[in-house]
Image (cartoon, rainbow, N blue to C red; front, side):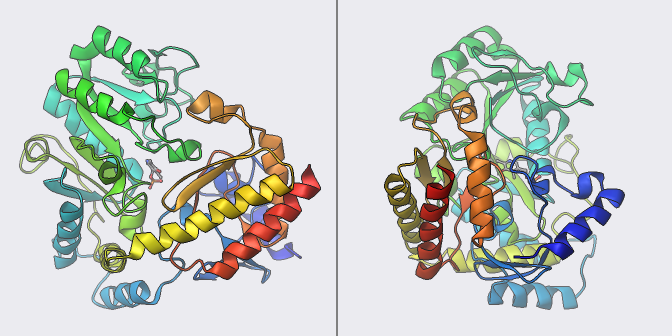
Length: 428
Ligand SMILES: *Cc1c(COP(=O)(O)O)cnc(C)c1O
């Protein structure tokens, strides 16, 4: 397998683009080696600029639930683009996509489109602060909500502490308004809310934590959060940028039957184009400009090409049986990977919700950030490189979920499981 062209492109990119990439994990730092430059992709496969093909489980980090370049989506995008790529004025696609989203998420009376998940969470929090007239927010350790300043705060282990910025460039004064609590720890959350309840505008969380792999909420955890936030007038925001239309059509909130006050979406709703959205209760959403005083805007928001990709995607995945079939494929992969690990005498823990999953290199249960962080990341790195050489493209980090698409076929799963066994044996 030659990766000469990728190597040479990466060398040049590093002189022109910070780190050679436009989003950090793409650089393969956690697993070693140089990133691959992709030339094209179709269905379940990626092809790099040197002509090597891979079965793709990254799927652009989640959006591509139909796989790469699905015919219907490409047709819709092409048709929309030919009619003009942006108007800076309302277009009919926005109304259609909003209607599809509001129908799928009963907790959302209204929605606003933005261009990324980061924008969605950032804006939702602004509205929640405007609504409650409070400044502080609570987030959970290990949950990722995009790269807005106040959301990069991540506290150390143990009980809730005042936010310390994890990234230089985030003023301490921003981070001070972010309180971080361990995921799956209702007692820690209760303590914070009892002390600070009146100052807290919102609690934001990933109901299934996909940004440290795939951490599942304990039985009753989300219901207790719902009750606590309601009692203290705290706006509950589900960040379903990853889980929306992924964990289920109606997201994690449908799966766990919880109604948050606000929801953030992204990834799948853009069908591979840059789209984010936030929405929620009518009385909260009516605060947004021009209906209300909270300002939020976007030159390209509701972009007709991006909206049409979202509409085409949702129109396929909302058909009955879509998720059953997709999740069945994911289950086959989960079982296959577990068997392969057993046969190779390798210690792994696999967690899966629908078509998102993570294979942790550990023999302990993973329930939060510290338990995820204690996995054998060196072993994962070796595994990643072995799989890549074998034609399987996994996320280049132990702490990222991998995804399946409707384009993944039985033969892809078989190849992946066989390769997994081979690689696990060789790295033992
Ligand atoms: C991907 C993601 C984001 C950020 O979305 P971008 O489009 O990358 O800005 C926010 N929250 C969650 C849960 C995500 O998975």
